[in-house]
Amino acid sequence: MEAISDTPKYGSLKEALIGIYGEDVRVKDRRAVHGGDANEAYSLYLSNGETLFIKANSVERADFFRAEAEGISAIRSTGAIRVPRIYATGADEGYSFLLMEYIDSVRAVESFWEKLGTDLARMHKADTAAFSKSGKYGFNRDNYIGAGYQKNAVKDSFIEFFAECRLRPQFELAEKYFDDDMVRKINRLLDTLDRYLIEPDMPSLLHGDLWSGNFMADEKGMPMLIDPAVYVGCNEADIAMTELFGGFDKRFYDSYFGFIGMVPGYDDRRDLYNLYHLLNHLNLFGSSYLYAVVRTIERYSFF
Ligand code: ADP
Image 1 (tube, rainbow, N blue to C red):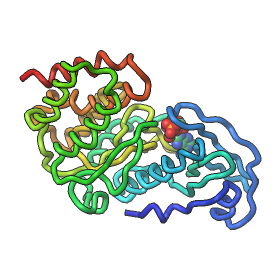
Image 2: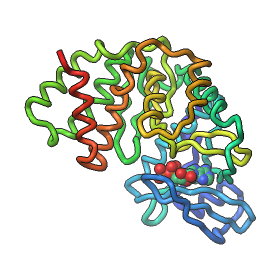
Image 3: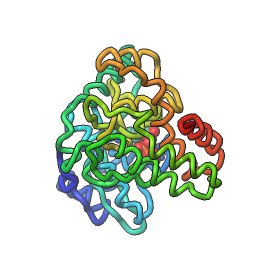
């Protein structure tokens, strides 16, 4: 895997542009790009005729962009699916930024969903040894999911990883929402997760935040992934998230499972993987997610 140090880090956007083009290039114009959920995003029109894409946030968020760059680099290294080329991370007066290739997206081709399914399956089958060096599951660094912190301590058991790095930190953040009875159920769930989840046949590099806003069609209408929250985990967790908020065509699932195979019982595990995302949403956006969280905990903590 390309290490994060391979993504140049600059003190300012001006320096970054000189670093990329080897000459003093100015930003002639910029246009806001909407659709993201965490950052300001713009296409930058440069004096040398090139266009770049930039995401910006406060200086304190600089590590978010370094983590995103490293996640994209991990996905790219599998060779399975296109991700934007990352040029630089940096911090200028008052903001941090991530500078990448601008994708002039066009309408998706007819085979878009099939290709997204097989590309993702190929990514899930890629060797993961470089991504979680001291064990099977996790990632070489912590990262972020939206504005939420995502712990990636490496573990040899996926079930232990999912309990300790996914559910428990989110439960701790959401403590104020739960009464004693609920806390008992949560602890029971964490202690008995192996009744519901399985250790995967193979570890997979996951996108980690695979909702319909995080894939796009490139300039040929082919699929690509953006804005990941990568870690090595169970492939089913990525698929479960696609079902949480919807927007993925049936052809995607047919081609994905046609390529990789479905392990029996997936339907019973799906909501447990998604409990992580519901908890993250509860912690980021508030109590409108509480009912769904409580219902899922109740379902998986019966005995
Ligand atoms: P955020 O981190 O705020 O969630 P995203 O990475 O999702 O931001 O990007 C915001 C929007 O910008 C996306 O929905 C997509 O439409 C567009 N976008 C993302 N990456 C690129 C790119 N490299 N080139 C052009 N447009 C992009």
